[in-house]
Image (tube, rainbow, N blue to C red; front, side):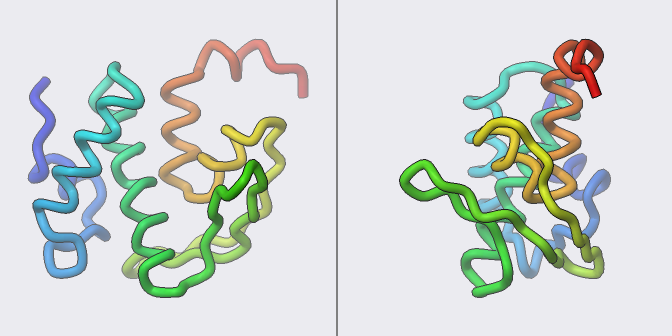
Length: 121
């Protein structure tokens, strides 16, 4: 399946063209493909995660950042009309980074489904 900005926007319509220009989405999609070269759905979720974090940092909105090995947990996040409130329960720094957005959580699920199926709760 070919990855396209149009398909990304169908799946995640909250990433409108005015706020998230095609060139920015394409760049984040390229980054996502470098990080995780597998299913299109995982790449789209990771692209949405990267865009949401970049937007939160650029607007001064509440958002988690990874700096010098420490992670701040997102408590509230808004992208377009979608708002999320959560506290991370992740076990690793990598998990905490991805759990900062609902898109990152989707990416974790898609990219690590075998790990989740064997995790003891």
